[in-house]
Length: 223
Image 1: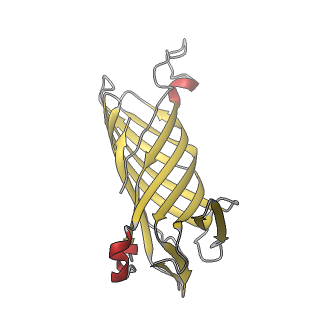
Image 2: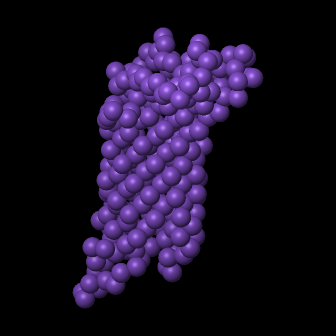
Image 3: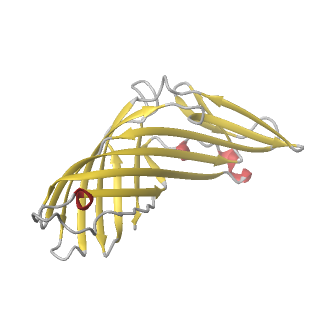
């Protein structure tokens, strides 16, 4: 699931003296914030009945920053390409999440304490978009195909944290060998007076063949 925010800062500049759109008029800067979901296998199907009384809470969020340039920029239609960054964070409170036998498993921690688990993925995007707007620019629609390449840092992968007696214990599992290193998303956006909705789905699985079948998606608000 997802909610998003999008800022377009470069759409209100005058055209060049020859009447053609200027560089800034062709440019778009977009920021998205949202909640994620997964199609296919889900964590809810992995949680045992004994977790019901442990107040397991989840928070799935996504952050995307994207620059787009309209190669085609007419009165009603635009088409172009861009460059973007994406960070997806899946948080679990009061649960220990492991990756065993090629799939996520959610369990009650064996050691008592304030436990949290977090799974993070990051991508570099190259969005390709087409769009339409009303003559006055009030209503806008944009469809994007988003090829992306995943990368790893010290903050990606599966991480656990436990607080006990004022001490914090951490560990991390790198899942780069299981993650598919690339993906292709499709995003549809609607805006009215700069505010609207978007939906984004992935056409590729999160993991390689032989691992858990998870298909990420997002949807939400656009500002």
